[in-house]
Image 1 (tube, rainbow, N blue to C red):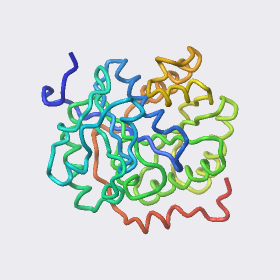
Image 2: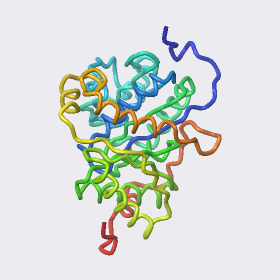
Image 3: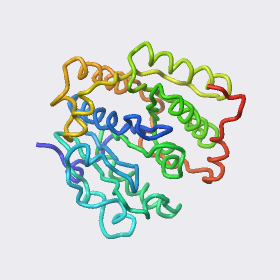
Length: 287
């Protein structure tokens, strides 16, 4: 039987990985969902947080029915445990809420309330995956900078590459996040390596960051089929595609943790205006 959060007592702080992207439509949520499923297969107790607040879709991708949203928690109507949905053996999902404008721009007070609640809840897990929204918005910065590690997902699309760099720039210059894992979606290995080298080149030139390439996922019909049928790729994909996705997930999950603290850590130190300014890519920052 799967241990529920209220049945688990004191444990070591979980590893927290934020999965982010500079623009939407790059497969960020697809990778988040499968990272969570793969970790659960390996015996980890996993919490997948849908942090694309107001535009959440993790529950939809998994074919789950949400029992509520974090808005109810912020407003004091529910506890986080009340809205958790079981997504599989050892995997819980925290729905973010869709179509709720109030969630798209949380106040600092609401961010504190949510972070405190999450800090208590996440102690019950081995791994917490945070599927953030896309871009450099306030909520994205809040979740990504509060996480232990950030995984950036991008595609060979030039706009995806430019926006991924802008996201890395904001997080590094305004939120002291200096180490990133990078996954390239919708690309074969050769194309993915080319994209990563371009991102690495401009980042090395202008930013004080470390980028860690963790793999790629090829564009394939089975991915679209899995999304449309609201199932994991494991149930409807080819073995080649499944093996490719597992290699990516296993690489991410095998990376050593940095530091001993772990958990969600509040590091909100700048305003949205500062973040937007830092995210502007100068003309000489050619990717």
